[in-house]
Length: 135
Image (cartoon, rainbow, N blue to C red; front, top):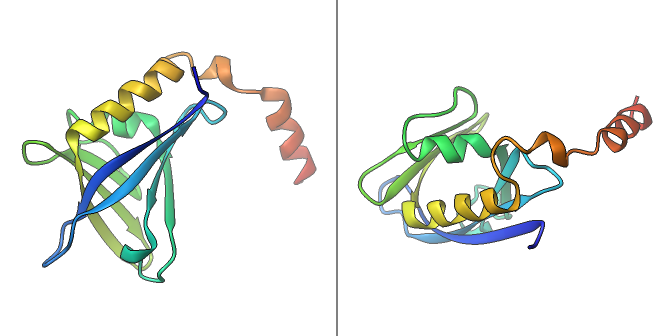
C-alpha cells in the first residue's frame, strides 16, 4: 500500500458566479495527522497554486458535524457537499467540496494510517534532530 495518496475533488468557491474546479487532497503517512488541500492557480488571488495543510481529523469529523475553531473549519453542507472554510489575512474563502470525493479520500487515508495509529508512524528521533538543527 502506498504511503502517500492524492485524490481529485470536485469543488466550487461559494461566491457569486463562481465556477467549479478540481482541487486535490493529499495525505502522507510521514505526516500522519495532516492532510493538504491543493487549489489550482486559476482560483487564487495571486495566480499561483495554493496549498493548505490542516488536521486530518477536521476533514474526518467535519463531514458529519462542524469541526475546527481556527483558520480552517469543516462542516456538512447541502446534500452531497462538505464545506471547507479557509481564513487568511487576505480574507475568508468558503469552498464546497463533493462529499463522495471527500469520503473516498478519507477512507483511503484511513487505510494508509488507521485512526489512533498516527503516533506509531512518527519518527521522533528525526523530528528532534530537525528541531535541534533549526535551534
